[in-house]
Image 1 (cartoon, rainbow, N blue to C red):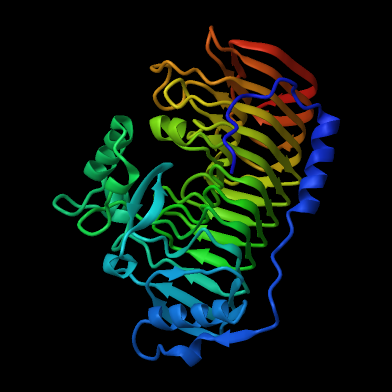
Image 2: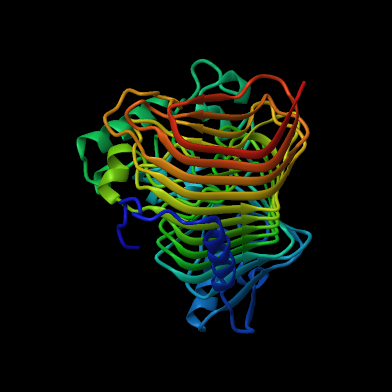
Length: 445
């Protein structure tokens, strides 16, 4: 992808935005595969791990010119699965791919990102690097086997099973951030064996034409679906149930042309989080995330329904959200734009319409430049041209919280034709230029 990190000179109008969203919906098409089938059970497996069987079946499918690797009903214990071009991993209904809890089964370390910083680390459970036309489809289950006994304790909190004297990722995370700040080459940022940075569940990296469809995902170590620097990504009709630490549902990062449709998110962090690299590393790489359409999704738990950030350093633009359902007693925010002057970057052209909200413990719309590190950096991010309409909310803490900086206010924020019933506190607005609130009804708690 090209580097394109400067904000646009002309903001997108609402009419133009939704035309563009429709065009995006049409051009992000699923990859097509030849009608060739390779049954994983014909390549080994049996009583032990199926890692080699998956490798062999995928290699055979790829060598033949592409097709489908069938995973029939049953349970398949495995280590890392690496996809190759023109291969669809088809997990049939009744099939469970159950990933090993042994970190050694995700070695050797691969080129990846951990929390938006480049490094070499344990392989994501399903990984692809510089491949085209790849898919994970079917009605089966991907089980990450994570929980209080495996993977989750590494985050270092008792809530997720950590106990004094057991492994903790804090030292490795601090080391990785320091390497990025010091400009250490990525090839020298090697973690994996003997370290405790958790792998993602699914990560295509520098891939084109990616489809994730129909599968059920449970118990991931951390981020579930994390395409990085990919183009033409379609995630549809996926259901994710994983309430672990940092268990974001879908995190397109520094990608272009992404559609997320018809999915269910019941996760331990943001349901969808759009990202573009973090801090010095994000500035070095300098690739934005742009052209993301989210439609007909159900967000149930836990932090942001649709989050933008906190990793905004490469810039984020052209995000469209429509016909979604947000809400549940454990879900915090609706639209959640979160960054600060340490992260930098920009966010522009965000459009949300026709969303039903049952219950949020915080705001329906939150755009906050004081998230996390607050205002302690020298790269205040411009946030502009955010339009929200057609929200119907039953219960929130407040309708909106909008906080810019005195020297870098939020610009051109519009909220219209929406109803917010049972609001518990007043809205918060500071350092905003060009705020328009029209046709909005707000009811007390």
